[in-house]
Amino acid sequence: MCTAMMQCGRFQLDLSRPLVMGILNVTPDSFSDGGRFRALDDALAQAERLMRDGADLLDIGGESTRPNAAYVSPQEEMDRVLPVLERLQGAPVPLSLDTRRSEVMRAGLTLGVDLINDVSALEDDGALALMRDSRAGICLMHKQGNPDSMQQRPHYQDVVAEVGDYLRRRVALCLDAGIARERLLADPGFGFGKTLEHNLALLAALPAVAERAGVPLLVGLSRKSMLGAITGEAVAEQRLGASVAAALEAARRGAAIIRVHDVKETRQALQVLAALQQSSLEQDSQK
Ligand code: 7PJ
Image (tube, rainbow, N blue to C red):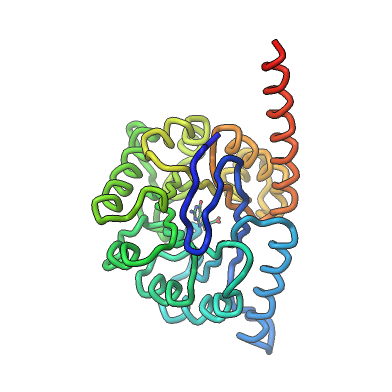
């Protein structure tokens, strides 16, 4: 468990229990004549649903960073996410923007996003300075290679040490730039240049990763192909059970924020875990 508070734009987040971040992918609906308007309406409806289901944060992304994903230009990325952010301004939960491009970050910050979730850990030119001058939270994620090729030959001597040390270096860079530690999250980046064995080693050793990073962890395991590899389920949308199990194990190993597609189901699982942990504590104190 994590005792920290986190500064996240308009919000101070209490990380003493794991929070659920709902994923909102904004991609154009190519089958509809409605085009962008239809995509915007769909995204807003999905945001409403995630919040109704109990999402503690929303993570809005317009560029797929999945393995082998097609290239999306920065302008296209902005055309997708900015109208959604504009309409969600003032939302009752923190709005996170999933982007690795500083120009997209800049536009998002202008619209008041509370968190920048960067799978490149602020490696893009200008990203660090931009974040220094804002009050948004930052998630620094590890990846090996780039999404177009990262799953070809992932290689590590000691995946837990290397990922943990990378995160520690990115945290140090932020601290040196004058960014408060309370604004930072780190993420081992499940599936980003990692084999199944690497992913499992990282999940099993999550407390060691957090220890090295020195800030609370955000983890994303929802529907990922590692869960397909374990279960044999080829269809991502059919990996709900595996996703909930993975989320629960991440929470048990101290993850502060869990990034998921299925908010309602994940929350239920976390509520059961919390009730059990509470009961264990009470039994221990009666001994
Ligand atoms: C992650 C992410 C993740 C963070 C994606 C997918 C691929 N951001 N963005 N962590 N994954 N922080 O959801 O399958 O694991 S996109």
